[in-house]
Structure formats: structure tokens, C-alpha cells
Length: 227
Image 1 (cartoon, rainbow, N blue to C red):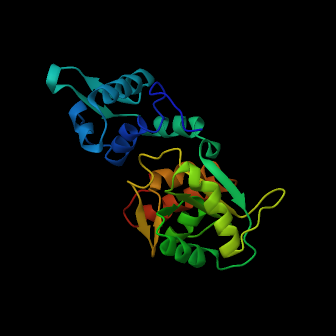
Image 2 (cartoon, rainbow, N blue to C red):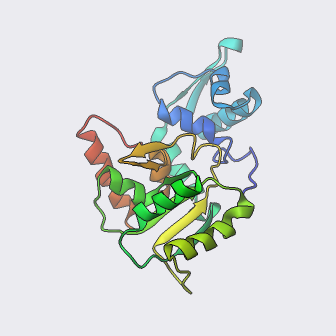
């Protein structure tokens, strides 16, 4: 679940390079720039070499003045969508019978001093709701060995149910541990994953593409981009 090699450019640590370049696609990057986000020169170089091989970037090799620039953003995003799956996260699907899950969940997390971020439709509806989907999606920042204990606590305290099949609440430990909480944003009064992570997760969900198209149009009218 959590073991991926650096040979995969979409792995947790390697993806820090991709996230940085997607966040600032017009920037020309040196290998040393990635030290600022906690990526070693060796890993940054490996990742950039593989990105160049796939055609995502152009590299100019001039010794210490070597540089890289993103040139195929859409291809990179499309390939990332193909490589990613919600199943890469360690998640649990539960059911909440009421309509007040989010405020109760947020209050519980604050009380227990547990960091979390919303993603998927939980996050997108805070930007601009479009698809009529009332499911909830959240990542938690707790140790793996504490996960089941917390799930049981949520069941006892919030009345979450574990059904034989299906559910409307997805709680998970993130595969992308290095970036999920580092890149978090605030939407309304709730913490949410970055737009890139919301995008990746929505692409895994039924009607997620429609939600993404709406968000792109909604933000474009306001002079912003989604991803």
C-alpha cells in the first residue's frame, strides 16, 4: 500500500517534483530549486530524467546552470490520472445516516486534535457545487497503527455504520503522505487538499469529470485555474 520505488515518477516523494512544476508551470527550474521542498538533488535528477524521457519537460544541460521547464502539462496530468487510484490510499468506506456529517466530523477532529483535509466532492462543493453527490471524502494525519482504532471511535461517537457494501463516507490515510497536508488549503472554514489532489481524486469518482469541467469554467471566469 505505502511502498513505492523512486522509479515511479508518480510515487509519493518523486511526485513532489511534479507538484512543484505543475503549481508553477511557467518557471524554469534548476535541480537545486527542489531542495527547498525537501527533495534531494539525486531524486530530483532521477525524476527530471524520467519526465524528460516521457516528454513532459525540456532540459538544457549546462553543468550547474542546467534547467528544466514543463512543456506538456496536459499529457503529464493525463498520465498521472492513469497511474493513480484511490485504492493506493488506505481507506475505509462507512455510512452516515444523517445530513450533518461535516460539522460533526470537523468538531470531532478538533476535539481529538487530529489533522485532516477534505477531498473529492467534499472539497469541490466548497469551491462551487455542481454534481449532486452528498458523499464525503477525507484524509487523516494519524499513524497507520491507529487507523482502525479511530474508525471505531468515529463509529461510536458519530454513529457511523459499516455496511456489508457501500457507504457515503470515505476516510483514508493518504498514499501521498509527503504532500497532502503540506499543500493543504482552506475552503470556507474547512481544511482541504490541494486543487491537484482534488482533481486526481475526482477523476476516480463517478461524475467526477463533470465536476472538474464545472470547476474549470467557474474558476476561469474569475481569472483562476483549477489545475
